[in-house]
Structures are given as structure tokens and as C-alpha cells.
Amino acid sequence: MPRYSPRFVHLQYFYRKLLRIVRWTPLVVLAVVFRNWPEFLEGPHLWTFLDFGHRGEFRLYLNIELVVSGLALLTAFVRWNASPAWRRLFSPVPCVSSVLMVATLALFVAVMLAKVPGVIHSEFRPIDPKTHFQSWSISVAALLLGVFQQELWNRAILQSALTRMFGNRWLGLAISVVLLTIEQSGHRLETFCTAVFLGVVFIRTQSVVCTTAIHVVLDVALGILQGGTFMEASFLSPLEMRSVKLPTMVGFLLLAFAVELWYRRSPRLLQSIKAAAKAVLLMVFAYVLYRLTSRALNPLWQALLDSGNEWMTRTFVTRIELLVDAAVPVIALAWLGWGPTLRELLALRPKATLGLAFVAALVPFLAVFITSPDAASDGLFAPLSPFTTSPYYWFGAVLPLVVAALHEEVIHRALVQPLVTRLFRSEWAGVVGSTLHFAAFHPPESVAFVIPGGLLFAIVFMRTRSIVCTTVLHVTLNVVMTMLSGSKLTLALFIPADDMVAVRPMLGALVLALAVGFEWCWRMSAEGRARRFRSTPNERIASAVGAPTSL
Image 1 (spheres, rainbow, N blue to C red):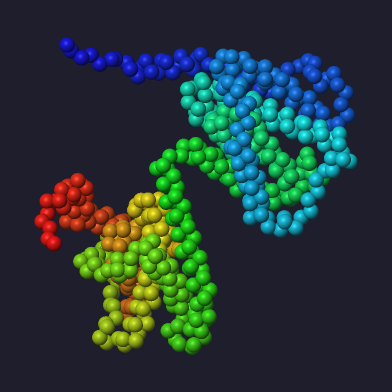
Image 2 (cartoon, helix red, strand yellow; image 1 turned 90 degrees about the vertical axis):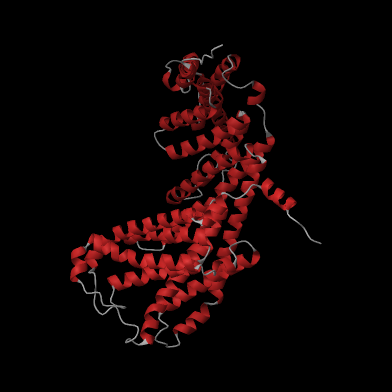
């Protein structure tokens, strides 16, 4: 019998989605309209029949109305299956609640001490509940009821209704966060970050008791820092509070990510987290060793500067200092087996080294003749002869270039690139990370040439694992560029500085083409084919079993 494929499958899917949205739209409109009904509804309210003499009583009675009306509407939503069941909504979830309450408080304390360390000497002046019992108790009740009614309306009613409407909890969270952020005329960043954090917690716990407890800790901490319900004076000045808010809000987003990561945990995810944590610890270890080496050898470098040797200039000694400081953690990681081995790093790789050096020496001249042929034809390229020039002059001119290239390769390639590769478990992530790290240590005006150059060095190191190869390539480019634009290694200036500005973008494009060409050649080489088409484990086992053995 012929097989018939169903038609308009996508049309049926969108029709069901549209039908679902139309079905739940009245409840969402009801939740949005009635969220702030006491502010828009004229007529008598609960607080109009009471004679209050304290400022907080108005908020207290207003929050009572919103709590009662929210519970009434929530009853209808639970009955219509638009919100979670009562048992889940009012489940305390003590483990998650206590951990996140402590994490929220710790976040405020950590950011405050990091941004304003002098606050530890400030005087803590809370309101004494014994002398101001009425105002204090009314303020506490207003705070608790206010937080509870916000969680009822924002999470249990609005976010749940949007989730039912679209059939996707993350889309419901996103739309509810957008609505809450737009509703606030000020403090939109704080509203956005806290809504994301509390919304993620509500998605995973389905408990307004949990989100209310976290929200209370958040409001109390903010009140203590900037002054309010429980404080006679603010703990931080307005300027200090502005410096604390941004990292605190970023911390709330990281807490939301941590909550979602915890609920999505799996053996594979836990293994990835352990690997990333180990990579971060290795980065910390390498940085600490780098700093300790720098401090321990600082007297030696100062003695070299004071020696009076004409070669020991401040720039040259600084380059040697950076080279040694970076080489110590590289050697330590190699010795501990946590990085590339010294045999790999010091491998000569003669074919790749000589071939890349030869092509790299031609690339700057090609860029000059493409971009500024008139300047190239007018200039006189007259490099210093190694036979007629004093060898001490050559040694003093070339040695700083070699040391500069070697120290950059040790830092960016031998140290940073393997650590970034281990952190993200991707060689190409290491390439991008080391390229950006390399570009950050160069002036912005040379970015058109530095980024392609860093990419070339990173790709070559990724494939050869040799800093000898990348250092020779780096030195070649530095020497040729010095000959073109400088006078240290030439008798006369070949290309004026104004023309070199136009040469750099073309030079960057050619260096990028060289990087792409090297990667293509590696992939087409016999070594690359052997790695890509390596036999499967079963084939290796079969060949090992069939191989003759001798006693």
C-alpha cells in the first residue's frame, strides 16, 4: 500500500499553540490588571476606615489587601490548573531556602568588603526595637507582607500563568521579567537581576515560601546597606552604594545560573565542572608562582640595572625578567604533568620552522609592494651587512628582539594557551584566548596586524606544540618589520612611517592568509590524516591479538 505523509504538520502545531495562547490569555490579563488594583480602584479600602498615625501603617494595610486579594485569585488559578498546587506553593524547601539565604547574605558581604574595604570600621546603628517598638513592629510586618504579596503576584500568579499560556517555563520567566522590569520607572537593573534570580528559584522549587525567604534576606541586606526600615543611618554612602550595586546584581545572575546548574547536574556535567575547577586552580597556581618568582628575583634585576653595562638597559632587563617569571610556572606545570612537556616545547620541528620563517620573511615585503608600490620603488632597501658590521652591534640589535619574542611566546603560548584549552576543553578556545591575551599587551593602533599575528602563532603552537617554532617565526617577523620601518638594522629608512600605516591592514590580511594556509597544509599532511583517520579501539585490539608474541 502507498505510504502517505501527513500534510500541514507545522500548521497543526501552530494552530494548537495559538489555541493554547487564546485559552490562557484571559487569566494572564487578569493577573496583569489586578496586580496593583488598590492604586487604580477608587472607593473605600481597608486602610480608609482606620486612623493611622504612623507612616508604615499605610503600607501595612495596603500589603494586607494585596495579600488577601492575591490569595483569593491564587485559589481560582490553582483550581483552574494555572498555578502549582497549594502543597507545592507553600512547601518550605528548607535545604534550598537556607543555602540560598546564606549565599545571598554572603554575596552582599563579599561585594561590600571588596568594593568598600573601609566599611568594616563603620559603626553599625540599627533601630532599637525596645525604644521604638510600635514603628519597628509595623515596619517588620509591612516588609514581610510586602515581600509575600510580591511573590504571590509575581511568581505564583503571573509567572505561572505565562508558563501555562506558552507551555514553556523559560519563556514564561522571560516575559514576566520583562513586564516587571518595564513596570519599574527606576532601579530597572536591580529589578531585572532579582526577578531572574527569584524566577529561576521558583521554577525549580515551585515554592513561594522559598522565594519569599530569599527576598526577605535581600531586602533586609539592602535596607542595612543604604538605610531604611531597621537602620538609624545608612551603612554606605550613596556613591559607595552605586559602586556596590552592579557587582551584586551580577552576583544574583551567577546565583541563578548556579541554581539551574545544580538542578541539571549529571555525571557528565559534574565531570566538566571538576575539570573546569581544576583548570582554574592551575591558573591560580601559575599566577601565584609567577608573582612569587617576580618578587624573589627582583633584587637580581635591580643589581643588573645598577651594574653599568651598556647592554643592560631597563627595557632589556624587563624583558628578561618577564621571560624568567613566565618560564618558572611553565617548567613547574611541565614537571608536574599538568602542561606541555619540555620535550614538546623545545622540539625543533625543522620543516615547519624553516618553511614558516621563509614565508614570513616575504610577507611584509609583499604587503608593502601591494599597498604602497611607489614608496617601495622610491626607497632604498640597504640592510646592514653581517660581514662589515661589528658583530657586537648585531648582537646588541638582534638580542632584544629575540628575548622579546621568546618572552611573549612563553607567556602567551606556553603558559596561557594550554591553560585556556584545559579550561574550555577545546584547542580552538585556547587559540582564541591566547590571541586575545596577546593583543591585550599591544597598543590599540596595531590591532590590525597584532590579532592576525597572534592567531598565526597560536595555530602554529597548537599544531607543533613547540615554542622554538613560534619564536623563530616571531623573531623573523619582528626583524623584517624593523628593517622596513626602522633604521637599526638598515643604512637608510625604506618605508616612511606614514606609508606604514596603510601597510599594516594588508600585512594583517596576508598573515591571516598564512595562518589559514598553514592549517590547511597541516590537515592535508600525512600526520594530520593519520590523526583524523586513526583506527578504532576494536581494530587496534584485533591487530594486537593477531600480532605474533614472543616469550
